[in-house]
Each structure stands twice: as C-alpha cells, then as structure tokens.
Image 1 (cartoon, each protein chain N blue to C red):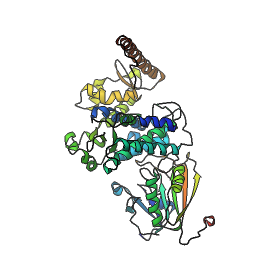
Image 2: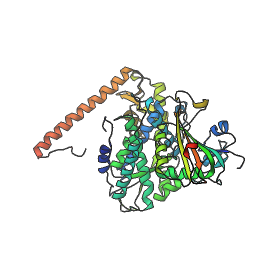
Image 3: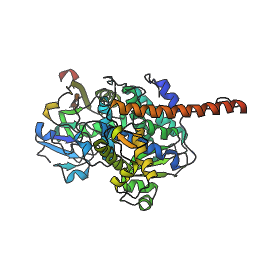
Image 4: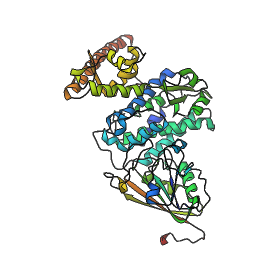
Length: 311
Length: 170
C-alpha cells in the first residue's frame, strides 16, 4: 500500500471496494492463506529467539502468539522504529466501518452465522492496519496476503478447533489425513447463505523451517549451494521436486529468507549473496516489463484503453 | 477459594500473581495448561466462577485474545471483574502499548465509553522501561516467547453504595 500514513478517508476507500464473492473457489485464496502463514513464520525465523530452534507447528496458540509477538516487536526486523503513539481511534473507526460494510453486503445482516466471520475479518484488518501505522508501506507486513483474501470477496476466520471447523465442512478431516496436516484451518464464505469453504493447512511450514535451518547450516552463501535433489533427500519425502519447489523453496525465496542460482539453493549470508539474489530478480522483472510493453502495444492496436485498470 | 485475596486472569504457566500478590488465585481458560502449569482454576475471564466481592486485586499480564480490544469485550470483562472485586479494589494490567487488547489509550477510552452501574473507576498509567524485564519477571506471549511490557495500568475500583460518592476522595 502507500508509504504515507493512512487516513480514515484512505481506509474508507479500501473498505468501500470490498465485496462478497458469489462463488467459493479455494484457488482464489489458498495461496494467500499460505503466504500469510509464511510471512508470520518469517518473524519466527529471523528474530533471534531460543524458540526458533525448537519444533514449531502452527496452531491457534502459536498463530496468536506470533501475531502478538510481531505487533509488539516489529522493530526487530524493520529499518525504522515504530512511533510510540498508535492511532487507536483510527483502528476502532476502521473496524466499525469494516463491520458495517460486511453486514451491508450480506443477505443475513442480523444472523449469528455471520458474526464469527465479521469479527475475525475485522480483527485481521486491524492487525494489518496497526502494522501499517507502525511501519507505513512495509513489505514485511504479514497481513498483506491476509487482506488480499478479503479483497477477493471472502470473509473468514482461522481456527484449530476441529469441532468448530467441521461444522462448516464435515468431511474436511477425513479427506486430508491427520499426519500430514497441522490443525490450523481457514474457513471462508462469500455472499451465499450457509455456503462455506475450508482449507486445512498442510505441514509445509514445518518443512520450510527445516529447510531454512538446513540451508543456514550447510549452505551458507552462494558458494555452498545445495541442490533440490539434496533437499529432497534431506526431507526424506515422497513429494516431487516440483511440489518441494512450490510448497517449500519458492515461499522461502519470496519471503527473502533464502536465495538460489542455477546450481541450487543457499542461505543469504553475505552482501555478495544478496546482490546475486537481487540482480537475478531484477533481470526477471525486466523481462516481464518487456512482455507487458508488448501487450500494451497490442492493446493499442485492439483499441483497448487502460489495460491494467483495476489492478 | 476464599483463601485467595487476589486473582490473576490468563496466567498461563506464569506465576506473577503468586510472586507479587500472594495469596493469589491463578486462572486461565486454556485447559491444555492443566498438565504443565500450576493453575488454581480454569475459567473464562468473561465468566468468572466466583461470588461477588471476593478479591481485592485482579491482575492481568499481557492479555491476548481477550481484554479491551472492543467496547463490547471491555464491558463484559469490566462487569465481571467489578462483580468479583470488593469495594476499594484494583485491576492491574501489565502489557505493551502495542497490544491491542490492553493498550492504555484504549483502556482509558473504554472506561469512558461504558457505564457500569454503581461503579466508579479511576485510571492511572505508569511507564515501564521495556529494556529490562519488569520486576525481574519473564513476561511471555501466549505461545511462550519472551516479551517486555512497557506500561502498567491501574484501575481503581470504588463501588457506590451510597449516592453522593466523592471521586476526589481516592
């Protein structure tokens, strides 16, 4: 978002654009959910804490603990110190506006069914806002992907209460198998009454921690890379290389926690490593910008104005 | 339970109340803590299983997931606390100024927003140096990470048995 401090008018504009989706498609929000969890995990991995070396599993308790820890200690990863005074009145007003907006969009304005979704969505919006007020426009704000879910038309809550989650999708725990899944689930709904979708988080975040710590120890820097095959052997997993890439290494790269080159993956240990990662990504961005320019030229030929409007 | 003069809410595996406000009843909602922690009572802060006028002091250390985040939550919590507290009692809240459930500005605002029948509450806040553990006590987040609070908020509770109660007499 903006690098300027948010005002109520700006927040109102963001909320005004919210809608409730008519469809329920897991693919709309699943990646944002996982990305939100990885963004939280980033703090767990980068902030010095004796717990970082202990086994970590997302559940409601660790999720809320990380939430609290991040809001109270964000200065440990940010370049700037958060101001002493947070505008809590603004946060209160924003939550009220958001709640009213969701109620106005729903057919069930007075239904208790909607309440947990409204309360949780407002809570998550507030976390994003508090973080942005402390560190305007920060890319480390772990609630950016969480807000994306709202902006795609879904209100939701996150829970590890199996009985509660099962109320919304009865077979979710039978479908997925307990061993490979943590307890944390996201329950979403759009505009339709009594229509819900659930994603039960898999164990990718535990594996991300393992791989991050493995690389930190055995691949410190771009001169000591470890290949994807070696990561697969280390994990002793049946997952395909592509799945490992999608679920583990790519999210770690996106979070800026590890780097890679043509030979493999590494822990970013030196300025040289960081420069290598940066230039590799810059090259990708330049290639994409070239493709965008081609599309823009084609748009002119087809008489399309404002090709990227709405994004 | 009459043995206890004070109560700590959401104590988790901590013993702040026992160390500094003894005899203190340590409570928490999370029954999973039954195995590892020494809690005296498992209960919801919004629904305390105690009779009225039982405790002199209520202590809340670094609350998360309950507290003063919304007006509604604050009203339920304060109603319940003032019910179990005696006249001329205190609610002590120790936490971070960034904790949305107990930031001093929100607590002060909520006290003005809600009206508790027959109860007067006076608000006071004290800065704590967060560079050091407060009272040498290791404060933890809900999942056990170390965190240092920077505010101590005290709510002085007086129950108006008679009309004409003079707030200046605190």
